[in-house]
Length: 354
Ligand code: GH3
Ligand code: MG
Ligand code: MG
Ligand code: MG
Image (cartoon, rainbow, N blue to C red; front, side):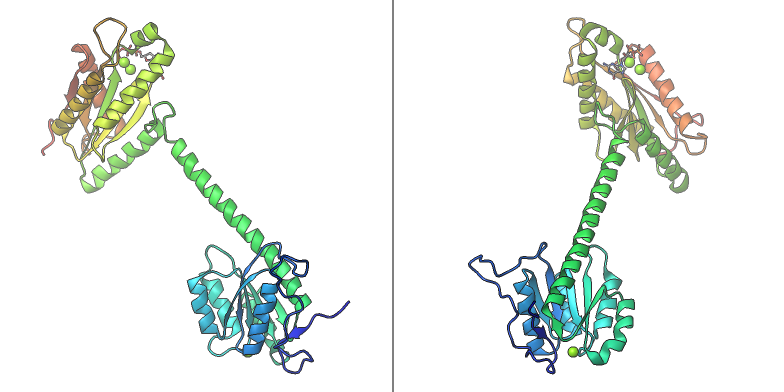
């Protein structure tokens, strides 16, 4: 087997200006082996002819290649664009190869840079230091092209592995975000579910206690919904629930939040709204559902909702349950007074000052 030419020190029989063994051929002929994964390579070499020859050889192997004449220039080029592989001389003006490698490792967050350190005979002693700085491999100078090709094959394998890991991490992160959202969403109506509601109410409670923020909540219950199901069937009932949720959602202000409490009941949380304001807001929601005019079984009637409103009292309420219980009591009054109406229940201490 013929030895491939070497690049890199003047002592070697091949001059550094000699072209690499296999040049790219534009005609798509047989001469050029294409890399399994084309890599973005950065060559860092201060000796111009060695640099040019390496660049040519790397391109001939099917990779793209940039070149820098010193460590600082290399760093600037890496800041401008990531490189899959850096092949760097040890001895360089400014940053040396190991320092460059250490700097790359210190900022690496996403894509991995495979680092090959080139060492001439006189700086072979620095090899361990370079590997300790984070280099993946080393390449003796003068550079033998077959050896370089083999090193880039290993580099491609490691780069591919890192890319796959990064992809998988991205997928996992996306999946877990989606799962997190799904676990807090009611699948029928698309509004927050009870778990989400509990988290929001608990955090509202602690914000009210700590910072004095005010919160009201409303329990909104569909009137005579059993009769609707009996008249039209459960599927139509589901559709009606979606429409009620949609009407409520359209009627709330930004900053308010709506959740499905269970069955045909929704909870609306209204931040920074004292009881009287919240009651007016919920009255608008009630009217919005009525205007939606979802037909009810008896002729001439449409689906309506009743609601009970309560403001959180961070002093008298021992917890979220007391707050909900007051809204529930108000809802009970609304149902008892003929439905399709909104009632509010003040705190035990009476109305809280605005
Ligand atoms: P009220 O005005 O007193 O609230 O009367 P109501 O009939 O709405 O109350 P009740 O608690 O007697 O019945 C609630 C009905 O809501 C019964 C139940 O089948 C129905 N329901 C609860 N969840 C769903 C759901 O997800 N889909 C459908 N289609 N119906 C549901
Ligand atoms: Mg040098
Ligand atoms: Mg109910
Ligand atoms: Mg009901």
